[in-house]
Image (cartoon, rainbow, N blue to C red):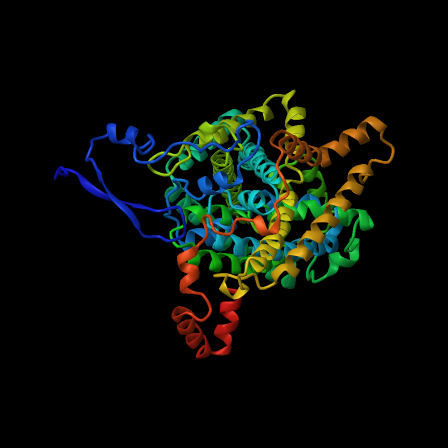
Length: 592
């Protein structure tokens, strides 16, 4: 008998994307604070922690057990399509676009900046489409890290997961510092340590409130950022046509004087990684697949809209600032040298136009943007750490998930890394922080390359095991060709970065020790990833996954795949509806 004083709560399955009530369990009506504290406990009806992933010798990795466990995590599916669409924006639009683009403009000029963003945007489009195809087919925790473990090699999945987790763990305090520095635009009377404390507590609080609160917060933050960027593009076009009090009509003046390129080809290569860093975070949308109510419907829409985000928010913004701010602007160079928000070309463009008050409004947007990225970093690192633990690739306590679907231990670790922000206050801490930041310098490139190669391997296994690409719920419009192009571009960027790291701009007359230090600051992430991979492979003796042995069943979106399989009634009805669509709607559905 169930006590009448108890209410009923739906618990949804996370073993696949089939979103139906798994069971109806009684939920006692308790008073605060008992109810609040109970929410942090694990569900007694759920298994806590991963299964055993090693063989009898204690060292052989069991990929079957790992795949089973990652498909049965206890994250809750509450995110909706609007959350996913804005999550991809919120995780990527931050200091990379608003601030770092200023230093890149000063280094390479507007021509190099635009070409770099176009190339990185094209590469990212191919990469995200590949990721979307795999994430819709397998909406499991860990996303690209899990795909690397399953489709490539468990050792590479381990290296990829930890590489991305470390990236998020380190970028989080960087964004907290950026937020504290942003406040100095208005006043320097507030102690930096106090600002860091306030922002760190705020970000941690949002993460502890659960995935639904996180989704709503990112939705609100992203709406503001999108509105601000669209407004800036319109304002920038008006300023360019009407001119400023000092210059009059601008047009393409700064592309001829001082010019479109600075430091030649090396300047272009130097800002490729900056452009890539600006796009980092877009892959977070796939990490949220395991917490999405209906990934079959929501994920394809969010993935398709990456195209518009790249064109509208990045390419147009970069074009506008390249027209409004010369690369030799004293404000741009001096501000970039001290790494403040005043180096933002967005603010410099507004100030140059003589518009009072609007620079403060843009600074508010920058403040919210960096806090949004910090918030996304806690989400990304905590979910990656929890998924790694669920696969036996991280300490077992990190797999702990409470009744509300929060990976509490992983969130605590991610929040604790935010304390590194206090290094900024210490004069001796800046050097240590520089080396910590170097660990994440190339992380996004490694992640994107892994996604592309995982997709290539996935498609080979899909075909060899008798499946048709028509049975995929969502299919990348650029296919494996796009993945090969994306992978090739990433390799070229790594080569270019190696060249710039060996022989940096403006470092001709420096000593050998300074050059070595500069090289490792730019390329430290490479040996770290290789050490992770080699160490794990040697210890667990993992093998490169054979195409015929790749698991395409565990955690797969089976029910939806059956409903939408070509030849089924659901697919036939869908095709009949599509035949009646006008041409504009077909194009819109293809892109959106």
